[in-house]
Amino acid sequence: MKVLIIDDDSDLLEMAARRMKKKGIDVLTALNLSDAFEILKKTTEINAIICDLFLANGENGIDFFENELNHIFKEKFILTTGDDSADNRIEKLKNSYSNFSCMQKPYSIDELLKYLG
Image (tube, rainbow, N blue to C red; front, side, top):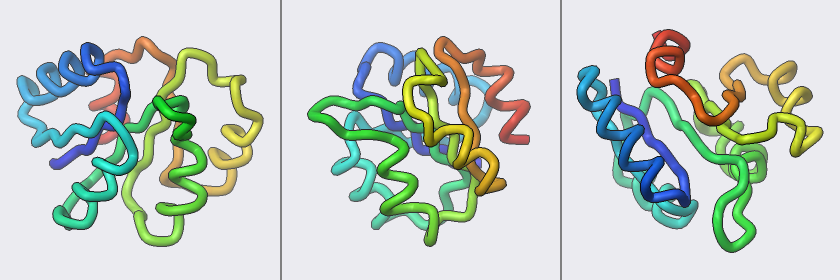
């Protein structure tokens, strides 16, 4: 399984990647959406994307999913946030797309892996 994690918190990103790698997951990481786009252009077999809701420089995980991914990425997209009521689009997207979900930070790697299957 190959997972892309997008988060502007480098400590959280590194910790999540390290823990997932210990569980046998192939992990790619990006601190911003520009880096994520470059990875997605070069890497075809990504099974899941884990993306923070609010990223640096005004980037937004929901906008990324709605505007860039929902038509081309059919694998699991997991939005992570410290406050799942921070954007009223979360519930709508969870109901509209079977591959969209949201996890509250701090999330458990074991819980995340159980969801990914």
